[in-house]
Image (cartoon, rainbow, N blue to C red; front, side):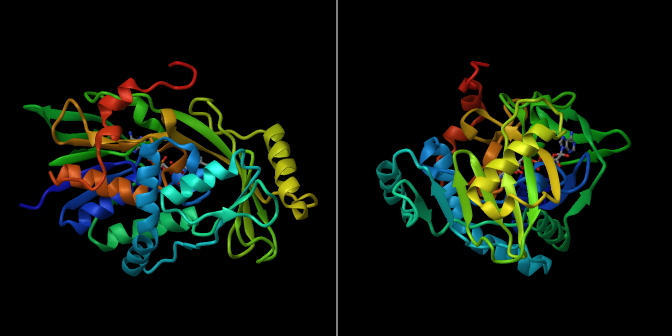
Length: 358
Ligand SMILES: Cc1cc2nc3c(=O)[nH]c(=O)nc-3n(C[C@H](O)[C@H](O)[C@H](O)COP(=O)(O)OP(=O)(O)OC[C@H]3O[C@@H](n4cnc5c(N)ncnc54)[C@H](O)[C@@H]3O)c2cc1C
């Protein structure tokens, strides 16, 4: 019997699960309270790697490395179905001011990640295989692929609660409509910590704001990602360049401020002096689905056997999308996943703490 899966949240986490489910023969409906990919998945930079890959907990690295290895083919598949270009570009990343380059190189070697000392300074590392996508284009391609494969997407349709029977969720409610479902996937990003009526909130998820600047240069001025001391520059092929980002614990407030714009601009100009005399063409903020240690929750919901969760990808949800979707759909279908699912369990998240102890 064909199963009807209802995915709540049409960011990259929800859309990638929807796509994987469609490929495995499910019927899929995706709900979003706003527009497709209109939140963090639009606002992000699209770097397809943790910024200093050696700095993260092993569960982040495991998911990231599996995703990174799969990404080029994953995008080709999406583009083939959708007819849209996600602007995947293996432009490499130069990390400057790396505190312990020897240890970083040893980590890369142990994890099969191409890395060498950069030519510019002794403390720089060149990661030639790091790639990027252009977020709005990836989201548009994912959306088109989901629709092309028969998925239904409903925008401006916030899920508010669930109907249950015998330990299962039978339907999801929005203000105007009730959506019956065999299985439900929660991919509600920064809002996952709020829960729905009748459904416990995902533990330890909180919105973490990131502000970003966009510049427009001539194409080719910069052709690789640059990173130093928390700041990155991401060139797009057409000359657009992103500079980011901040990590702000400011609730659901997506506003930007002038002081941050000036600071990001000054730091960006230190990395690329051509930016000093230019004004940003855009300045925005997005809300990351923050989680302690950047470790997402990819698991069955503890209260209902047919509800699943794919959220809390914090700084790396675009990077982690293919492997997260693969893991979740394996769990949904009762297959043995390639990666050990233990670190991404709901229960494991209950035991993690934020740096402030909460
Ligand atoms: C400034 C910035 C830079 C970033 N840079 C990178 C990067 O370079 N590389 C990288 O890998 N990651 C990056 N990220 C992180 C990445 O963007 C996120 O981890 C990822 O987009 C999370 O995707 P998501 O689908 O889980 O969340 P979202 O994209 O936020 O999607 C969640 C969706 O759920 C919907 N929703 C919420 N509640 C409900 C409800 N009740 N009913 C229906 N719909 C609901 C929302 O409307 C939203 O569309 C960055 C993020 C920011 C903000």
